Every structure is written in structure tokens, then in C-alpha cells.
Length: 117
Image (cartoon, rainbow, N blue to C red; front, side, top):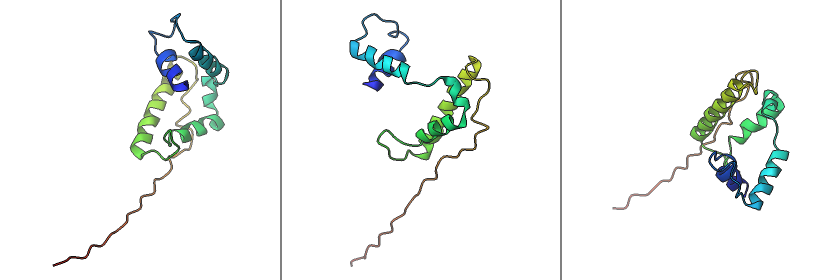
């Protein structure tokens, strides 16, 4: 329901101000409003670090691919730059934060086949 309410209503500029918003969507969006931090809180490392860690996992909790993590971080950086441009943040805090995505562990399993003649 959360993904539906945000994707179909809150982030959809054409439907955001609609009057026919279902009650369940209204309730969900009210909950989001009450439980969401200000953008300005991203200037604190103790808030920003868990956000970056969240970019490294998929919805099911398994590790995301390095290419996905890189793409998500670029998108997140663009969103932060937009917040700086709108004066919601004084500066982009990402360059000052010492954070690296977790290294992925790759295991190669070698299987030997016997040749039959």
C-alpha cells in the first residue's frame, strides 16, 4: 500500500491534488507525513549513513548488484543536489561522508567433468 500511495498519488503531479483520493491512500499518506524526517536531517552523518546502507539491498533484503548500488547512489546524489538548489540543504553532505558500498563476495565453483570415449 505504501508503494502504491507514493507512486500513484504522492509522486504523481497530475493526481497529487485530486479530490477522489481513496481513504486508504489518504491514511497511508498521512502516516508518511507524520513519520518522515525533514530533508535537512540528511546533513547529519548518523541519518545519511543508514540511507546509503539502504541503497545496497534489494526489497527482499538480499544484496544488490554493484551496478545497481552505483546507479542508486547517482540518483540519490542528484536528489540531494536538487535539495541544495532549493535551499533545503546548505551543501551536499555526500562528499564529506566517508562511506563505501560493501564489497560483493564472488565464489567460483569449479566442476570437473570426466571425458568419456
